[in-house]
Image (cartoon, rainbow, N blue to C red; front, side, top):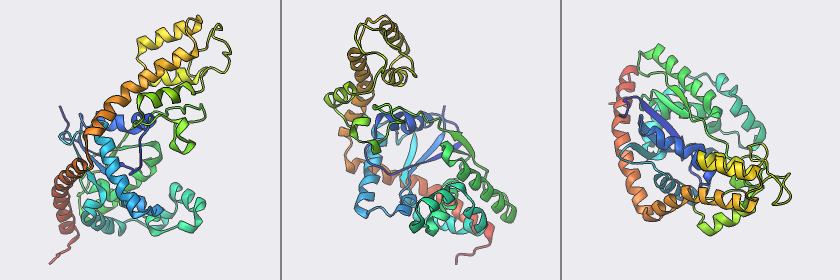
Length: 332
């Protein structure tokens, strides 16, 4: 049974997804749509702080919608929309909330200070005001729960503080949203160097768009057990001892994984066969995704985003009306 508790989470508009993204973000969103009154938005306004090219941004938004729908988001079970499709409501609330948030506190936010230090030539107001815009995303629907990663907890605490300050000035309008940590799994790279990431090159990750041949080729080149030089030697099938086995812990069922571990320790199977089984496990995730993705056109995704926009806008306008009234804005 879906709870009446309203949950919200933002999705970055990016390109292709890999299996690390599936476990790191998408899987959790799919699970939570069964438990909450879930609203998921593609955060295209937030992405403007880095000045993406307009054509790239539009393509990423539609591509992201297709990817997440193919990955299991169900428009019958959640509301999926683009942040900019509610720009009037979000930006209006952002303006009101900015009136209760001291500038000094925003300038002391650790993530802002880090980005300003790393990119001193791109310290714009949008970067400083990012937490206020995030608060508007959340409070626009009186969301009670926010699905976030560890890196966003400081921003969520600011959203809670903004809600408290607004309520102190204008009455109890907003609930203080609570975090739901997404517990994103850090899927290791095929190379064994850190987590799986597109920035390390195509050989380091398995894309959700890869066909069976590409999955097999990439997996065959994955780093395995550095201490096992020959097929006749016993292996070390632990997360610390073998990168391929560590990947098995995420993608292969427990009973099969136990059988692989036993055979590896007894030198009953070699790294080649172990990698073939991992490729099968990858494909069990990828193939259903690819089939759904191929059936879902760009027009289908746009239609679903428009439906989500209309559903979200109805409740957003109701909250905006309440906020205006609480603040004494006549809006004649």
